[in-house]
Length: 130
Ligand code: 9YT
Image (cartoon, rainbow, N blue to C red; front, side, top):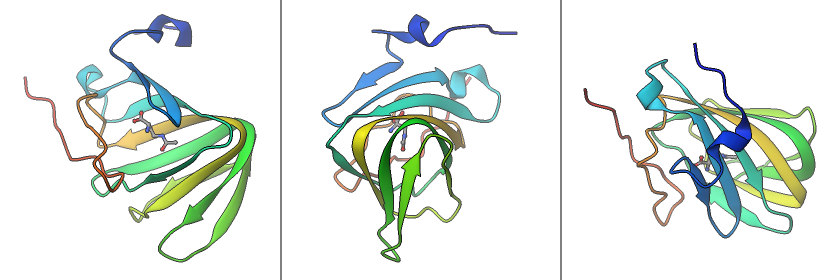
């Protein structure tokens, strides 16, 4: 069993800070449980494009407000505390934060922590080897 707290990840290699967002990866592929779990903060006033071509992602908003746009259909959905979206079709999307948004994100297959978003917001598929 692993018991931890979000603050334990501060300024570690699991704490990724970019211009638009910060993500602390609490569970990664190296834990070998079949998914990864991240807490992502989307900074107020930012717009980010993501396209997880190799992963399924569920995102549960637990604070703040903004919206997600499905770039494949143009549909826009407001997000606030309690909103959930599931990218079960690898949808390319943008996230706009009016207020800083706090999101709990689950990925399958799990993120290893070595992925880097390319210019299209895509993560390559990276797998752990023993
Ligand atoms: C909201 C969202 O898509 N979060 C994804 C996780 C974050 N970009 C990360 O940990 O790389």
